[in-house]
Length: 296
Image (cartoon, rainbow, N blue to C red; front, side, top):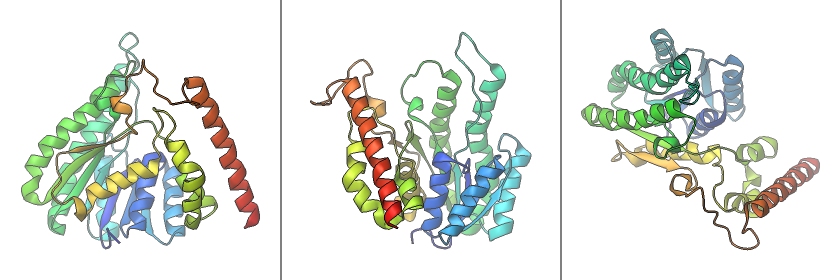
């Protein structure tokens, strides 16, 4: 196991990307502290980890406040005795467009995404030093790299994460702490559905029958949260011991696309044909899933 004996605090772990990270890190041997203000979602993540034989606990600290951050970090150390990894993944707030700007929403976006990363690192650092080093992985976004209309504060917060990561990486390297980021695109995927409803042993069949075809529809396509979690796992693990100050895009090429050009071979040479094929694959997958569950 790649993270045996390590402790990870993952914020925003009550759903989606954060939950995928928490479950994967636990499968690799880490004790996981699930941070989320959604206590129901956080509790479900803990249940899923424990059902798979992993170790986890939940904390409901609000990372938009110093008190909430300290509660989360102190809870990790009090429960497991150390802290090796901090995954700053929480996101909240919405600014609206420039024409219809919401200052309070924008401030919350910046605080939860950017300030929580920097202040969280500040409070994590002494514990990581005591552990002999550590890794910080922040969740940025493809919107840090390309212009997307209608989300200026979100783009600013996610771009700010990349600037903070580079600065923090230089400062914290002598403390044996590495700092990196992942940049997801849109997310959706069936990997955890297969694991939860059928079992991991069905993943090869799923991949052969549906996974590749779903993934390789003409771009853009959403990214499975498992893939984003795998990228974060790599950056947090000793395999990335010489990697710091970097961002890893896990977006199925979304950041390099021209949105005014559709690239698809026949018979998927139009957006309409792609959409129809996507719907067919979804229906075929649901039928396969139901049949496999019936067999069991």
